[in-house]
Image 1 (cartoon, rainbow, N blue to C red):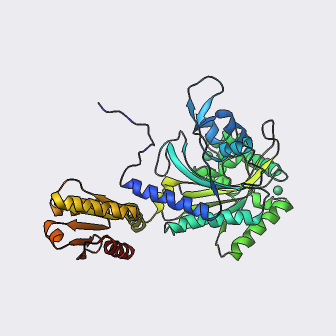
Image 2 (cartoon, protein in one colour):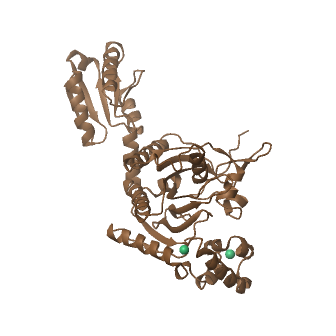
Length: 426
Ligand SMILES: [Zn+2]
Ligand SMILES: [Zn+2]
């Protein structure tokens, strides 16, 4: 009998875990380089939080939440991180403290969807939030940061799409125009889209049905219906991107599915065909958490989020290989038992003290077996200390990448220098 696992979940184990771990470390380092501080909220959150922020008509709230059986209030596994993070910052009096303004996260989120390539029920999201007034520099930094992450992993097949989805002054008027248009054409829409006309109008743009796509093509566009403030903000963002040599497309169909977005929004979309229909790598934009009986003031900012698994699917294979090697052990020591084992252990302890990732096979084995194991584990260098080497006060160093090997003096300091040189050559 086998125990069946939940669909759309996976375990992070070697050697895929080496890539995952490297991705995580690299992303966190980039965020820190840009001045962002790490945060993570609990996985278990009140249902009410998401109804209130991402909207009761959103796909997430209507059909994608994992409920936890408990008494009222109802709890769910968080489907995204921005809303719980903003509320936590508010509760902890950090949302407008001006001490911390920029935050990043790397956390698990949960959505009860039909699993497919690049879409899981339990997955990791990384993202950043920069709280404060709307400013083109704040938007621009977010976009630069997102692009930096893609570049870090050698991802080249992507496009930056931008849009402005309006504000409280122009969005409602536009939505009414759009509703009227879709109502006039509702006979040509699928059942699902017909239901969305009144509740989730913009989402009709996302429908993959050919007829719905045709109707959408002639629909009024938000970019033609912006107020002067939104128009100005959008032009400023374009100027910023031009000044920083970032190429972009204006895509008036980007809606972002969540209620809290406002004005400038953006998406990085994979164009290399690695992700099938789930091609959005990173999505974000400006948002406003409106004041209500919980929040005393509006909280504004700009942020983005990306799925870690989609990112990994988009990383070229040669880069993944390098990441694996980076995360693996630098040095493995092989010995022939007895005195060679004792002496090898001293080498291991010394190298570890010096920050070299080092391990040893405790059991003596044929050298070919050890080399084959080291190769499977992506180890960079193998040191071999046999009876013969020990009697000569020498040790053999083998570079697993190039196959090059040489005997060097069995002296820890000399050994360390040789190892550093070899590792930097790999
Ligand atoms: Zn506006
Ligand atoms: Zn449809």
